[in-house]
Amino acid sequence: MQQSAVPELAHTRTRPIHWVLTATAVAGVVALSTVAQPGSATAAQPAAAPRTTTAPAAAPGTTGVTFPLDCGPVKALVVKEADTDLDGDGRPETVAVVHCDAPMGTPPDGVYVLTRAADGGKPRVVATLVRPEDRLTVTDFAVRARTVSATLLGYSSDSVPSCCPDLRTPAGWRWDGSAFIRSTGASAHSV
Image (cartoon, rainbow, N blue to C red; front, side, top):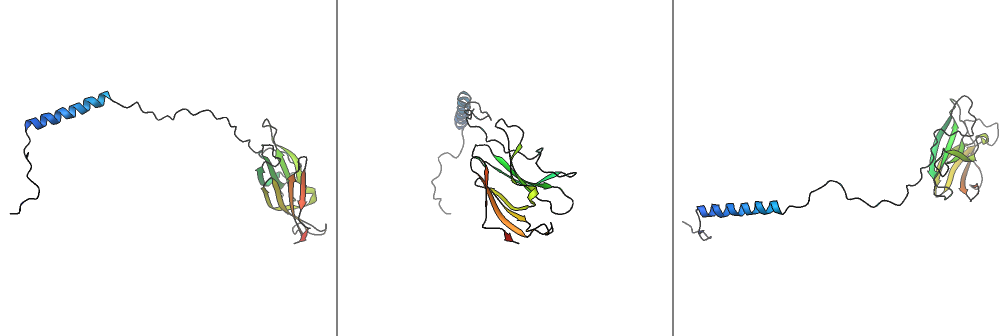
């Protein structure tokens, strides 16, 4: 028989004194845990200090706005829109590309700038960047860095069919403190 590497344990049998000591230790731990308890837990977060910043103003929407556009029996249709603070007053404006919802043909676009009063009143048109009377179609519309940009598709003469504009002009508008100033590319390009 092989000898064990571990010396024999002195206690191989439990005696009643062992059970009494174990029971006393467990009772002491239970008694101590009922006296020393942590504070009650809550799911609520501690109250935060009130915020002093105000929420940014919302850009004016296009719903319910009367655009200076004569559409006869059909309604005006907003086809593109973007918003940003164009004049730096801390209140965003909305720039909308609008045309008549004509069942046939290519209706000309108008580009309008909308704002709302400081008290948050009803949105209103404050500037016209492209007039529908000019018979232009707006493409590549964007608002970036307080500048409105677009490509304007137009006609070299009244004999050019409305379906097929033959001029392409890049344009941009920027607020100068009193009005929107238009900048254009070098010249109109034939399509």
